[in-house]
Image 1 (spheres, one colour):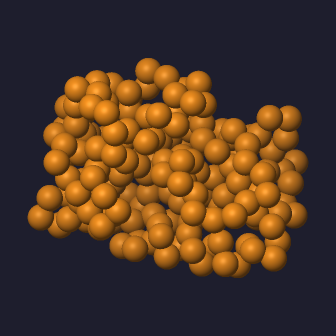
Image 2 (cartoon, one colour):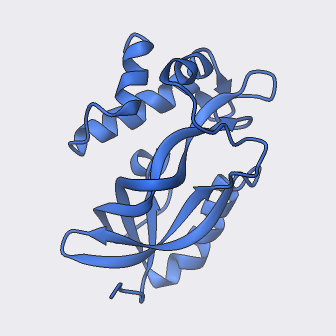
Length: 177
């Protein structure tokens, strides 16, 4: 049975290395039923409509290791508002509540999964196409390759290495961030 008393937030991309909100606790977490994928064309944060970048989405199937944050009850509303404003700029994500596994327990967490019917949904791109899309893209939150670099660095810190993101990173010459 999953704990349900607190607001938990599941991060799998930039929320792992730049949550942007106060939290009481951060734990490694696994979400089943979804996987981390460069499946979202970024028209805002890491690209433009003329030169879209790619950002991560939780796409259906598999599982995803990430980080779960426990939010103080008095901050829950403000954190949800902040996250909705950050993640729902173009409504390419759907906020959902799913059970995530933490060390020794399970909790219900808010997660943002990709809307496969949205025009920004990129689907399953080859690693080479992902690298091409990321290379040179820039949006209001910065250079797309920096987003990849930060995510890869955080995955390394968590002991998650040599996955698809690492292979895209190597295709881009593993530049320094």
